[in-house]
Image (cartoon, rainbow, N blue to C red; front, side, top):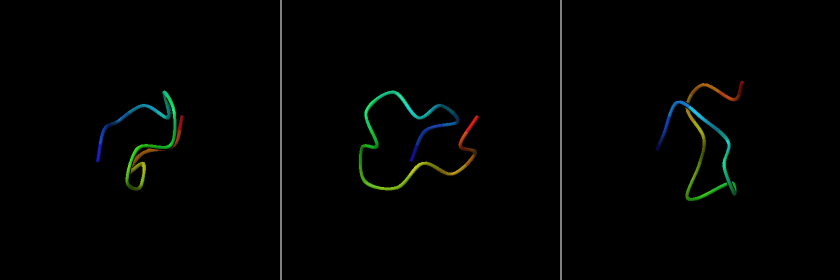
Length: 16
């Protein structure tokens, strides 16, 4: 749940 899709951890909220 991060504002960056670094490694698709869990589920990216704001995917770039």
